[in-house]
Length: 524
Image 1 (cartoon, helix red, strand yellow):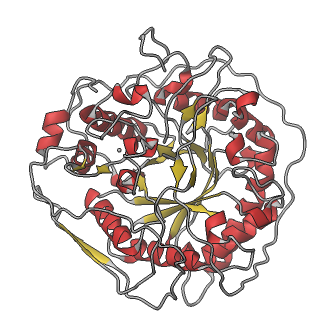
Image 2: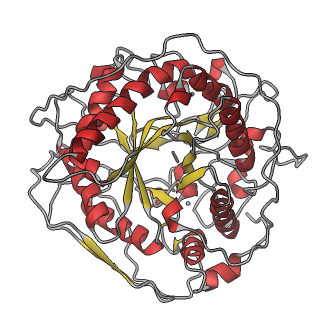
Image 3: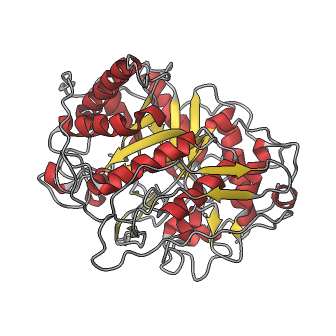
């Protein structure tokens, strides 16, 4: 979540995202995700050659899924929260919820050298902006049966699951029917010991991603790179980029050498307009561009070389995406930079010349419908600034792009979601998470996809998240990431939002969950 402090707002407590039960007209086979805690002193096991896992799916009104486990024992992965993470917008004194951390490993060495071109260094000039209206025709609350395009839809999945849980999660996504699978690669987890390390965790990630791409579902993988290891940066506080931008480019190249054939998009970093994600470097769009350009060139260099590979040529282009920015206002004391201003600085530092890149955005909408716009006098709050509104976030980013002469570039939503604590145990982590219920979460999610797919300048949208609520301790510890999950613990498992998305991709099926929840009033 992001730190938000607008000049007109003193302190705002809000969400987590990148950190969500349903009446089921059918009875799917129930398989529950229970990550195995790492025992003390556990070590990574060697990774043998495996047969890629597959999943079967009946795309009918009665949905049954069978996940076929791969014949591989990867040892125990610690999926219990141990370190810090947050997801959209929070106040200055907010206590960060935790995230999963993998163990360090020792592995053979690999050295990568990538030609890098110079980066812009001139001071940015910020163009003046004037308000522009939203696209005409807001989406009504009551909609006809949608017919969403699954090629424009994706979900983010936690890559720290053990193999059985990963196979089940892939099966759940395959059944859902979306094309895109996003995984955020925490560099510090993959290479904790040095730049030549090929850790067991990195090998495991390679197996997972290749299996997801090759198991018959044909998932297109989006990789998001973040969190440099301590050996690559001189500041050891929170998370940040490496001291040397070329080090990030080299790491991306090394990962592409292993999983690039399954990779269709790369997001270069995550929310660099927050200090907690950009420690050690200036909190400016110009600073980010010093890292974007070498990474962009490295991906292009790798893609061009791989296209000529006689054994396994790359037959598709890899979409390069700028880091999705946190929807946040300007507050230096709290470590947040206004995402609109930050994007202007990126363009002023040369982003517009990379016309085939896409602009990443995280346009969270809190408890507001996707097409609602700022502002209102609702006493519940979180409603007095455009950063709290999905449609306003998209509109304002588009306005910056057009004012910067980049109207031909696409915008990709690399992280977004709607949170509810309904049917989860205990009190909600944030009060606003009680303002919408399970049905409204499904309504807003479907409408957000429908709205985005109606805009000609939008690329795919990645939903946050599939199943964080199933990880050990998430609900018990009131971790905000659980509020966004499509799959939650017993007795519910798939929330209504899961089946509503399933049905919105297949409008001829008209499942009972869709009929029950469509157009439901806000509840909590």
